[in-house]
Image (cartoon, rainbow, N blue to C red; front, side):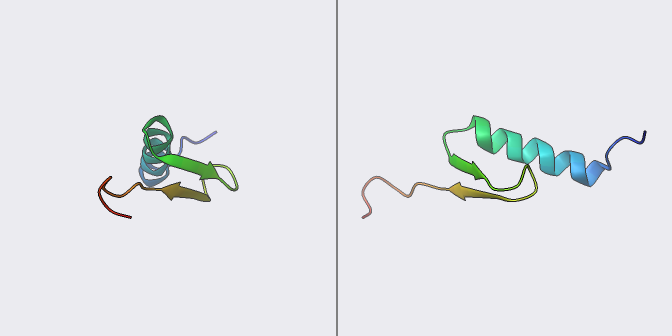
Length: 45
């Protein structure tokens, strides 16, 4: 079995960091398809 390519590993790491952060992350289809909700400044509407 081959290890994942460096690009794939980087994407997985970035997605996991987003999930662990304060951003709202919704996984659609594993780590390949997802939505991230970024909150704007508190002063904005």
